[in-house]
Amino acid sequence: MIQKMTPSHFKLNYQYREYHFTEDDLKHSVPKALNDTRVNLSKIHSSNNMLGLILSLHISFAINAKKTALLMNQIFGAKISGQTVRNYAEAAAPYCHKFNMDNKGPIDNILAGDETYIKVMGKHHYIWFFISPKKRKIVAYHVSDSRETGPAITAMLEAIRTAKKDQIITIVTDGNPSYIAGMHFINNYFKEKNKKNGEKNETDKLKHIKVIGLKNLDETSTKYRVFKQIIERLNRTYKQNAKAAAGFHSFNGAVSLTTLFVTHYNFLRPHSTLSYNTPIPLPVLNDCRTLQEKWLKILSLAA
Image 1 (cartoon, one colour):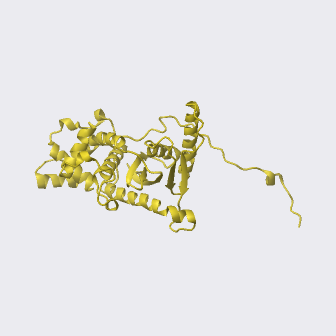
Image 2 (cartoon, helix red, strand yellow):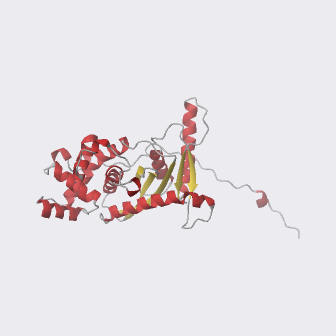
Image 3 (cartoon, helix red, strand yellow):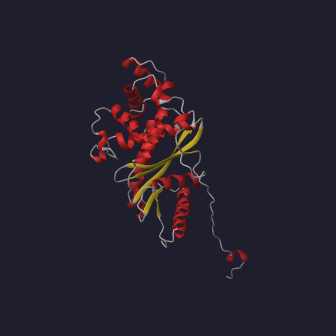
């Protein structure tokens, strides 16, 4: 049988992507600046101990704002409202964001990343997390209104911000194509940066491993499944903390709670895998006997 040949048989198919992101497009989500928050922590009517207790109940124990206010009233006699609890949390977030960025430390050669959705004013938004598996510390967090390439790049750039200059990072994610596209952008970005600095390093900064599905159907999934499970457990832990909010009424509220959650997770939350140490142990917190004292110490260090 002779098959008839047409011009389409000789057509070459390929994809070409060229991204023109500006610095504003890749800007990291941050809590509102101190002068934009509703309250100033240095001028609040409650005592510092009360502030530490509020953050301990609302963030560390994931109790919603109204119930936190009720507990503070009935146990400690502090007459505050649920809105006051939210105001204090949003005012503490800029300090904690600075503290998170300054104390992240070095990262592993393999990072696990994923995104999970939340509701902000009834619409889907996304939290991007990257975790350093050996120490179980969160090395990147970012809030966005889409799952596209831009937010993925922002999260990955933050994840590798403290990497060594010659460190090659492997990221393990699901099948979201935004990670692959973002990886190509970042690799090209570092190569162009090296050229400008007169260096001839053409090695890719990032490598990507894709783990999809629930079963290990190939050797790659078998080897790297454990990293995907670690980031999925982090997502579940975050969802448990965010569940108390029952959705967010503002974008800044989502960013603030996420920021405070990372502070709690990295510096205050004992982890069973780490012999009940925190992912980022800080000697400066060793003298603090209670959780509220540790919250206050972090705020004072970041001020």
